[in-house]
Length: 89
Image 1 (spheres, rainbow, N blue to C red):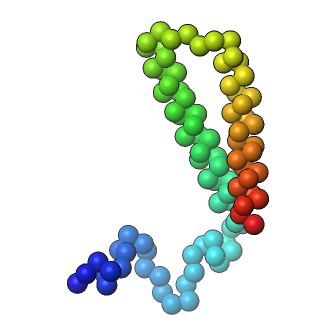
Image 2 (cartoon, rainbow, N blue to C red):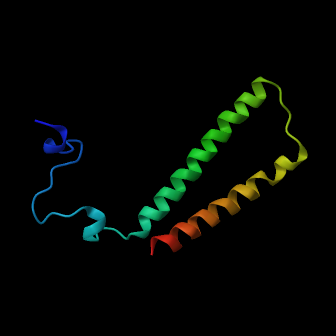
């Protein structure tokens, strides 16, 4: 049997008339937007923590402008969250 005939076996089996939770309305659709934006923020913070560890290991001293970093990250998060809400609807 070819792969196209078998289908994707990674997805859970759905019965006729059964819909996905986000299509059924179990939780608000905005949760998906919030979740993806917050996940991206957490991944970015983790990447910068690892980057900071490498900076410490190689004794790289950041400039004074590093003080603006939390503000820039916060503004970026708000912009991404707003754009994702606007594009979602």
